[in-house]
Length: 94
Image 1 (cartoon, rainbow, N blue to C red):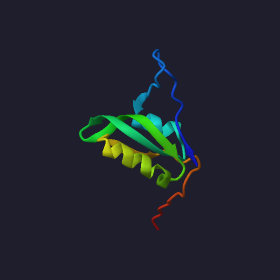
Image 2: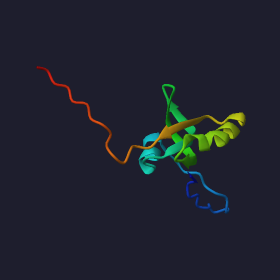
Image 3: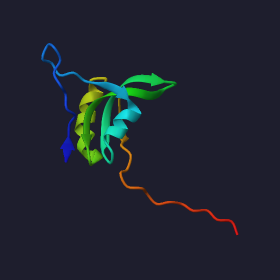
């Protein structure tokens, strides 16, 4: 199932694309794949971006990602934090 971000209109009626830190986008979409346009990097690592699309299955984002890539848009795919804790590893020394 594919979802998109809410894009409020600006003063000129055109959709505004909000720019946020990558970690903020991830926190906003737990358990969801997030496709972002990278707008700022630090030491070669993306730190800020604008939301392109979200999906529960990353395959749903493939065509959207390809369209942006052919336009020369720098993108990244990331995943929001899991809403349920994963397995824990316990180390014990005898």
